[in-house]
Each structure stands twice: as structure tokens, then as C-alpha cells.
Length: 334
Length: 114
Image (cartoon, rainbow over all chains, first blue to last red; front, top):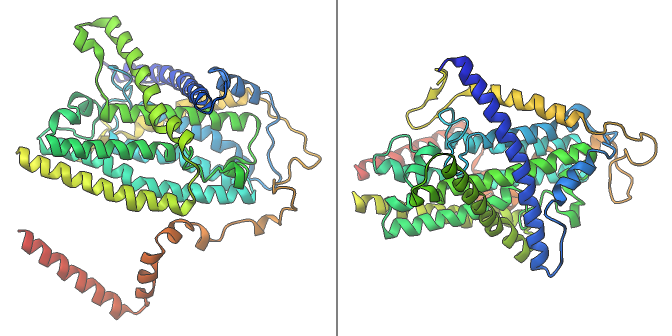
């Protein structure tokens, strides 16, 4: 295949996955809102509500505060959405390999995850509002807090695979081919479950959802880093939030729940891909329910110092314990 | 596959492909953003920073000082900083002693493990 055909395929695949990312992301936000409402004995908005919100925001005034740095204030929401969509291109969808498979691995994904958060920080600082400035500062602190446990999860899984002599352990395609649960013994299983628990708790922080929504904190910072945003800029951030939700759930599925039903059913071709995608979408809803919906319906917001303590001390320590358990498991299995 | 992919031994990535896809989606997202309403009423209160009805201070007075940028992080692990900050005396002799001490400790550990 020539490099021109390569580029064409990447372009078409990129656009197709981006459309899927926006639609599925907003759909996940709608399902999350509906489920939370039901758990709080409310009827809640219809599942299509995020689409209506975005459509309406695009017709509203796009106010740029007089103290804002206009180009950064307007550019941050676009960069947040684009950088979230690009991560999606490195992630598998069901049994379909990533569009950018072979062009980036798990370490790259970990770095790319910081770009949407940095866009939020840039937007907050550029808006010239005291609330947004404090929100942006908190977003940075939250980001450096969850990086440690997130890095431990990624490295622990890849290290356990490399201990078994599996090549390219940071490749998501490899990780899906050799699920962690099939490599480990009882101790490694406990270590794997701890890593799963850590990633489930990193997800709401990555998405700035309760109890880790200190950067936005409606009741104390009036929306924090988004306080000055309105109209289409707010719509872009909201859409990026949906895409990031999809990204985090897809990462968790790829690392811990990579199974597809087509192999068990002995199916092939388009039918297998369709069934695998349907099953993948079902897993997305389950993961978002467990890591976002259930958590935010049960727990109140943490203070920023509690967020740091939780990730660096509690989850950091748990991550190291998981790493030790996987290490003992690897030595015992060798 | 394009031949511009970097291999580190454990991982790999292709910055050109990332940049190309990023720019493509940036153009598309900008066109999407551009279709929305751009205008807004410039007179009145709505362009002033929101501060719960209080008068916002001047622009230069609302920025965080660099020492406050990581507040929350430094506050949560204050016990660590209370010990580490005084150790930074600014005296080169102290730093060299620390360097030699830590280096000897690491070498001892390496010898013991081997």
C-alpha cells in the first residue's frame, strides 16, 4: 500500500471515528444524566438532552469577557475537543483495531490525556475571572495528582506482560490479545483487581466529575474554570467532556475487559464486527455507570487537599501494592 | 506503514501522524465551531468578570502568584515540604554532602541486591 493510500485511510478513519466519538460521547452523557436522575427519584432529562443542549448553545451569544485573552479563550475549547478526539483514534472499538494502530502506544495515550486538561486550564486562566483562575489552578493540581496512580496502572500491566516475554507490551492491540486475567495467578489476580479499582477512581477525576469536580465546583466557584464560558465555546467544552468520557471508558475496557463475543459464537465478517461493537457499547455504558454515575450519585465533593491525599497517598500506595503482587506473581509463575 | 515511527525499545510513536491527524481534526472542529453564533452584546454588565455581584478587581490583580499555583498539592503533603524545604540551605557544601550520601546509599543497596 502506498503512503498516499495510507494517508487517505487515516483521514477517512479519523473523520469517521470523530463522528462516532461526538455522537457516542454525548449519548453517554445523556445516559449518565438519566441514570443519576432515576437514582435520585427524579424523572430526569431525555437521553438525547445533551444533543439538544449543544444545538441550543450554538445559537446563543458567545460572550468573551473584557479581561479575557480572546484568541486563547476561543481557541481552548476547540483544542480540548480535537485533542480528545485524537486520543480516540489510538483506541480499539470492539474487535476493530485502532485507526492509528502501530503509530502510538499506551505511554503516548497517557501523555495525550493531559492535553484536554491543559486546554481547560488555558481557557480558565485566559478568561480573566477570579473564579476561573482558582478553578484552573485546581485543575492543574488534580491533574498532577491522578497522574501517579494512572501511570502505575499502565506500567504495571505492561511490565507483567513483558515478564511473560510478550513483545510490544505497551501496544493496546497486544494488551487486548493477551488479557491480564489470562496471564496471572491468584496473587496477580488480586493485583489486577486493585489496578482496575484505581482506574475506576482515576476516571471521574480525569473527567472532573463528582467527587473530583473541585475545578468546577458550582456551589463554591460558580462553575470554576468554565464560569465565563457561554454559547458555542461552552458547547465545544461540553462535547469534549462527552468524548473524554468515551475515551476513559474505552481505555478501561481495552485494559481490563477486552473480550468480544464473536469468537465465542464462531462468527466472522461484518456480522462479527457488528456484534462486537454492540457488545462494546454495552460495556461502555456499564463502565461509565460504575466509574461516573454511581460514584457521583453516592459521594459529595472532596476538597482539593483530599483529592491530592487520595491519589498520591491512598491510591499511590495501593498501586505499589498491586505492582508488588504482580511482581511476586511473575516470579512465582516463572 | 510510514517509516517515521520512533521505537524506544519498549514503546513507539509517530509524531508526524499525530500532528497530521491533529491538524486535520483541528480544521474540521474549527469549521464546526465557526458555524455557531459569534456575536454578543458588548455593552452592559455581561462582559465583566462574574464575581457574585462584587466589583471585580483590576486585571493585573486577579492573577495567581506562582507560589500559589500548586496550592492544594503542597498543602496536602505539607509534612513532606516542611522537612524538605529547610534542607535547601543554598550552601553548596550541604548539597554535595547530600549527593554523596544518597549516592553511597544507592551503591550499598545495589551491592546488597546483587
